[in-house]
Length: 174
Image 1: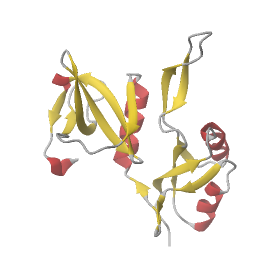
Image 2: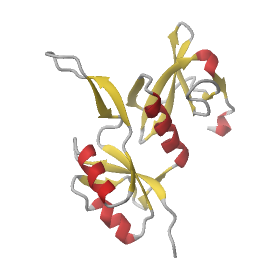
Image 3: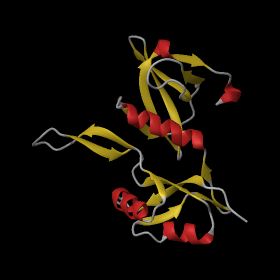
């Protein structure tokens, strides 16, 4: 029986995302560590640095055959694949593609813990470099700008775009 490769979220030790990424890449396993650019918080200088979008998490594309699973979780700094008592739960490909898209564009990204929105409408970006991205309307930013969110790992990644560049979707399509 051949198991299909799927994306899984991998929990890492604190600040070990880069170490785990490099070690798993050396094992020829497909891995994705979403990074964003932020201004360093040092007082003596201002510098733009790359930081993980979701600190402590990265994504691996593996089948769950015992050898491959063990090969990933035995990596120095890796803790476990996220899941339930039934085992690891795959992350939908569409979430990975959305994360790749918003981290590659270079626009400001807002992150935080997911919470229930009273008026969260499903939306799709119809114009610009993020066209095709599906998410949920989060808030008005002012001057025709809005923030939409993409759920992943119980957190969200939000991006600010023009209100005219999004369309409301029926809630069934998100």
